[in-house]
Image (tube, rainbow, N blue to C red; front, side, top):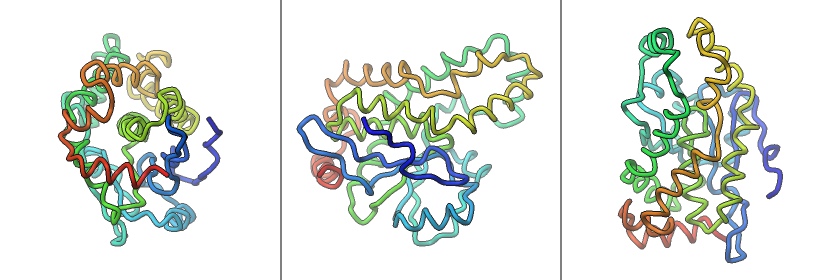
Amino acid sequence: MPDRKDIYKFEKLYNFRDIGGLPTKDGRMMKTGILFRSGELSRLSKNDLKKFNQLNIKSICDLRTLNEQKSKISRLQSNTKVQVLNISIHDKSREFTLLEFFKFLVTKSNSINFEDIMKDMYKHMASEISEEIKQIIIFLSDQRNLPALIHCTGGKDRTGFISAVIQLFAGVPYKIVMDDYLLSNQLIAVPMKKKEKFIQWASLFRVPPEHIKPILEAREEYLEEACNNIFNQYGDLESFLKLACKIPEYNLKRFQELIIE
């Protein structure tokens, strides 16, 4: 797999890259310049905005919850040229207000298993967001909405899962999809280190760094368990999208035509 992390560099936007440019099992390629992924867009600099506009992105799929959208408002919000599809993907039982999060860390820090929390989140995405996936794929199967950006807050979990679903559906080999998913760890190293320090301070240093890392990293076992849940039940991604997500055949075929050369 080619080194992709230096293709797009922004000053205040992390984990931005093209989902495409990858080979498929049948010898074709996913197109570039059609689908992008990133973290949240609240801190874009003037140079970032200029570079972003040059990509001619027509629409954004924002996977964040309403609370996340309010706390970190996109700098593109006033850009009427870019259509935004808000598709909230989150395990609602894990959603905390900032105050609740502080209380949770301070009072229960010794009992938190962040790895279990992350695995539960991926299990939730593999089994409980079929309607959200349907909305995303149908939206992206309309050429008028492309090029498009898919993003959440960090751009590694919800965005990573949706990107993997799209890449696997396009026929990109699993190993290449996994490598691209794990690339997030290089691209978010700086902000995740800051978040690690913040959580330590918030917990009054009761949570050691190694305890925090499961929520700050993209890990192979997270995506693998989610994919295995899908494969074991449906066999492949196309069947999952047809049977679980109930996406019409027309939209799936049209989407393939739009994203594969």
